[in-house]
Length: 129
Image (tube, rainbow, N blue to C red; front, side):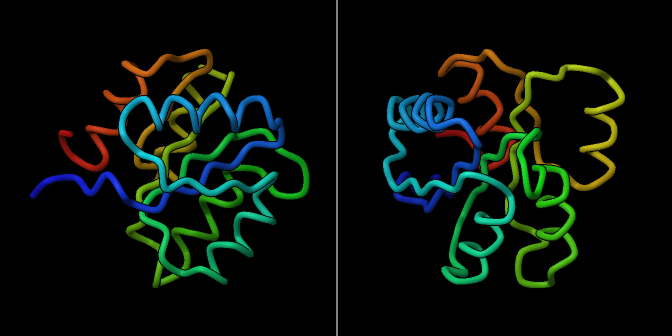
C-alpha cells in the first residue's frame, strides 16, 4: 500500500524554529498536511479534538507535558494506541532511547537531523515513499 502523502501530521515542539525546521523537512519529503502544538498538553487537546491525526512528531523536552508523557497518554488511549509516534530530541543517550521504546515510541530522531535521516525514520514507521 502506498503512503498517503496527504496524511495529517502533528508536529510538537516548544520552540517555533524547531517546528518550522521539521515542517519544512516534511514538505521537502512531500508531506504538507501539517499541524503544530507548542507542548504535550496542547498536543493532547488537539489529538482529542481532531481525532484523525495519522502521525505525531514530538520533541521530548517541553514544559507542561513532555513528549514522553504525551507518548504515555497516546499509548494508554484505545483510539490512539497504534498511532505512529516519532520522538525528536537532542538527547541521544541510550537510556532515553530505551525508555522511549519501552513506552511504545515508533521511532526516535536525534537533533540535528536532515531530510534524509527523517525519511529513513519515517519509512521504518509508515512504509516506503
